[in-house]
Length: 105
Image (tube, rainbow, N blue to C red; front, top):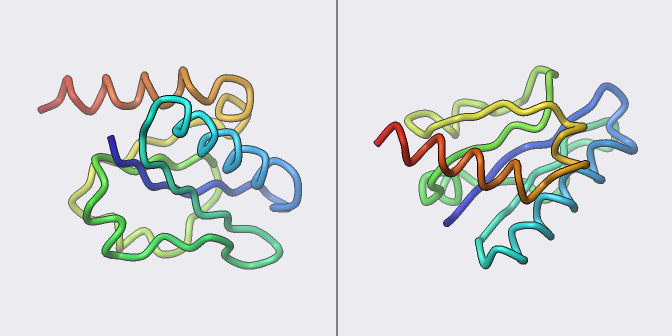
């Protein structure tokens, strides 16, 4: 499974990197390719390219903030998840999102 996404919180200093790291670590544990871009006060970190977005099975947005560059995800299933859930249960979040995407096929 290939997943790309964005994590963002109001300040972008704590929850943003915590969620990104938790999701990517959970992806590794599942044997999935997971790349999460961080958007916050320090700008974009680990930016997801349009090519990476095109190759992804789905896009995970770990935020309730406005995300920059959403146009690169056009045509892909986009799932928004509370950033705290991504920190607390990242593997469960990934599995649930994948199941939801598969169910819509």
